[in-house]
Structures are given as C-alpha cells and as structure tokens.
Image (cartoon, rainbow over all chains, first blue to last red; front, side):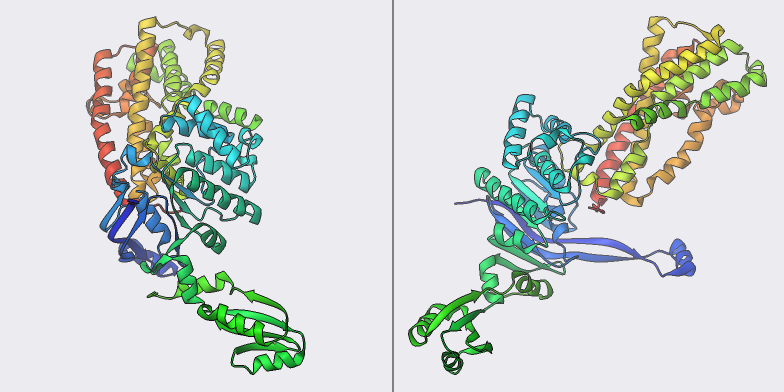
Length: 331
Length: 244
C-alpha cells in the first residue's frame, strides 16, 4: 500500500493585518493608534497526499494556495491544526526533513546573481553534505535532463529567464529531495520552456517517485502533470479529487461539429432531437452529454450522410475558471 | 569586472575615519591631555583603521533586504542557518579587503615614517584573535537586530540607533582613555570599547589589560549568542514569507 507522505488535519492560518486611512490625518491616526485585525487566510483544511503523487493546488489569487505550500515546507507557522510531512512537523525544520524537501518559486531565485550557476550548485552541495564527486555526478545528470550545459559557467545575471529557471531547478534538486513544492514554476517562461519544464518534472517524478505539490495559473501545467487537484477557495478546500472527474462535472457536454454531404441532411439532423448550437449551410454544431457520446455518434453515422466530424473540448481555462469562483464542488 | 575592483577599493577607502580623527587630534595637540605621544596616537588610529576593516558588519542591511525581497525563504528551508551565509560573506569580503588595507598602511608609513613599527609575533596573534572576537560581537549584535525584521520590517532603523554609541564609545573617534574617569567606568561595562579601542590599543602597543579585555570580549559573546538563538527561534515563528 502506498503511504501518506503528507498529512494535514484541521489546518488554519491567520495573519494580523493593520489598515490605514488615506491622507495625512490617516497617517497620524495610524501612527498613534494602529488598527489591527486578524485575517484567517486558511480555514480548517484537511487532506493527505500519497508518496509519488503529483497534486495541483488551484485557486484564484489570494485564495491561500501559496500559504498552504509555505506551511507544508515549514516556512511559516500554522495558527491551528497539524501537519506531518514524511513524519516530521515541518516548522521544526529538522535537518532530515529539510534534506528531503525543496521549494521552487517562479521568479524568485536562490542562485548567486554575480556568479555562474555552477558555483551556487557546489555551495548547495556543501550545505547538503554532498562530496564533490557526488555533486558533480548529480549536476551532470540534472543538466542532461534539462538540456543545459555551457550556460552553467556564465554569470547568472547574463542568463535568459528560461536558462535561469533550469539552473534554479538544478540548485533546488541537487540533494535529490523526495518532495517538491513548486509555486508557479513556469511563471514568465515562454511556451517551449514551459513544455520542457513540464517534461522534466514528469521524468523526475517517474525516475525518483518524488511527490510533487504544484500551484500554477497555467492550466496546461495542471492538466499535463496532475491527476489530482485540490481547489482552494477563500482559504477552504472546495474540491479535492481527480482532475478528469472535475472536468467532466464542470463540463458535462461536448460540442460536435458535423459536416453533412448536403444541406438537407443538416436540416434533418437538426430536427432529430439533438441540441443545436448553430447551423451554417451543411455544417451543424450540436451539444451531446459526455455519457452518451458513443451511442449518439453511432446513431448519427448510421442515419445521416456525414462528410466530416470534429469533437471540440471546451477550453480548459474556461472550465477551471469556474472552480476559482465557486465555493463547493460535491462530486 | 572593473566595477567590482573599484567597489572593493572604495570599501577600503571608506573606512578612513580614523585618519581624519588622527589629524584632528594631532593638529590640536589633544593627545597632551591624556599623555599619549604623537607616535603612539598615530599608531593607535592606524590600528583602529585595521581593526575596523576586519570587524565591520552589515548583516542587518543584507538580511533586511533579503527579507523584503523574499530571498530568505529558500535559505530557511536549507539545513543551514541563513546567518552562516552572511557570516561567510563577511569573512570573504574581509579577505578581499586585506591587500587594499595594506596599500593604505604603506602610504600611511610613507607620510609618517616615524610611526613605523613591527609588533612582536605574540601581540600580533593576540590582536588578530581580538579583532576576530570584535567581529563576532558586532556580528551577533547586528544579527539580533536583524532578527527584529520578523516583527518590524525596518530593523536597520534600530541599527542606526546603535551606531551612535558604537561610533563614540568604541574608540573610533577617540581612544576611550580620553573620556572622563566617571564615564570610563561605565563605558568599560558595555561591549563598545572591545570593538575597536581594545584591539587597536593591543596591536599598537599602548598600555592595555590584555587578559581583562579578551575575557570581556568572550563574556559578551557568551551573553549575546543565547540571546540571538532565542530571538531567532521566536522570530521565525513570526515569519510571514512576504515578498515570496
């Protein structure tokens, strides 16, 4: 049986926030009597993640995804509830725990700006107690996987964003962590660099069975990497389950564009009980429920003279967008 | 890379306050009131320059900037306290400054040949130890102040407040021996005279209580270190990882 590697129970996090009225009067008032209020950004959430799983955290800006990741990796202290990651309390930041995890934040870098990435790699290798031979071996392996070579010897400030991100990944993975926390890792990358990064993460997960917790606003990252998603809405979990189940629930129908041989066939098809979206000459678009696609297509192909047929998936961004504004998905 | 070389040279030059003070002291014959000869006074200020070069600390500014920019977060999830990074940075920069400090000393002796002296090996070694202890005290004080970033975001303002006693009581502007007797007894109870005055007096060959000075330096390190650990552990609980 696959073990739970992350176990979160009734987790909450509150931040004290002070507010100030605009203008000089507000500033003076704020100086003498600061108005503070406690804002609960994470509200009593519970979930488990199994070893080797890739889980996507979805939510609008400010929903609490990054705060959850920060608590999971021990960066910030939870206000209530418990977290166990590989059996450790993350906030204690025990050496063995820290050697097992990594956190990668898009556009935030740990590489030393004025030195080539290779220097930062060897520094990290020392921090994680790797000898030079082992470090060299791992750098070679990771740089081959990421297809980066000569750039490792050029000062970081002279590298492109994509090259820097690849170098960041090597720096963050040199100690071969079992758990990767990735906060918008593809932010700002071009389409090819995004695709390469996704390919790399898939490969890394496959080769090392590492658990990956990922947040991203690029739906392609989520759909190509994650089988399971946790949707966060205003600090609470609105959905936790399989991504394809969520997509089916959110988008129960598919649009099918059918090109008939004659306009008469198209008219006949339009009058045969299907929901018609639109019709132009011999082309007709109908909507069919996901669970009856096979039988409906069989009927159409048997009874009408069809020249061509296209099944259109609804745009994934549009579908997932619905999740970000809804409080609860009971599936 | 020219800009880096110039920057390093500017670091070294920026520490020449002791030479200005030497000029003020000798031109106004202020040293007569405290029975220190011109030669010993010029050696004292040269040594103050050297001690300052190898004990100057700016960790509060680095940590504050890194906190605000969200750079502390990746450091915090590594199995090494981030202050070790800053400590290593300081040591590396001290080594870089060394040749420039030697060049400045060379010119000092060209213009003040009568001040040239060679300290004996024992004193030299003790002075190096004492300068390092001075660096440790300053590093710990600033690290404690830097940890206040977890509460206030602008810990460097508190550091600026500490800079005033450091400037006046450390021996950078005047040897502590020149202060009135009633003040001296209080000053020697603070960590400040052990930052520059004591190591500079030790190296320049001025009369000083070696064992007493070293003991006080070690005592301050033992007092400050647990305080740093306490404030660090409390502060990290307050950390909100802003900017990241």
